Image (cartoon, rainbow, N blue to C red; front, top):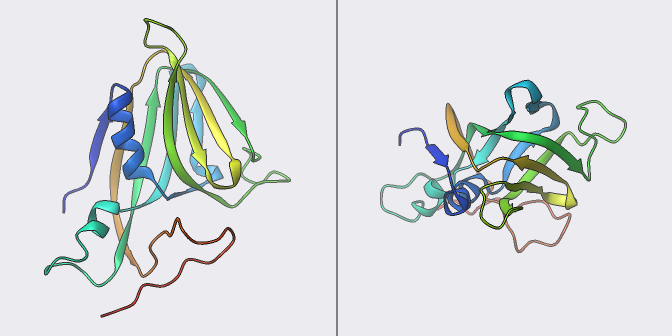
Length: 166
């Protein structure tokens, strides 16, 4: 499979990008806001849901995959965080966060300005004030196998169950 390269220029595109980022693991130190460039970017280890959906096919692999990916947002005017210390080694810094969804809320009736929210597990979030939606998700080449598939039905705090090997 070739590396994933997605661009989001509207709310519908952002929903597709969000689906591919669901359950990505992000280290606090791998997020950055470049105020002068109006850019927010992060590097993550995303779970490959597309490959997981092919797992039941005749040609599928026995394990799931994670991929190193970059997620970039342009035209960002402000960034606010909640639920975690944004300093990678801060007093209350989490070693990593799990990205659950990326959402968009317009702030103008007829204009493209709005807020993009990156929602993480445990109630953590990053809110980006944007002039308009301009985002890109790009795989960075590194791929590795994992026996664990994120389980959204598991009780809070439970460890992910290893998949049954056939």
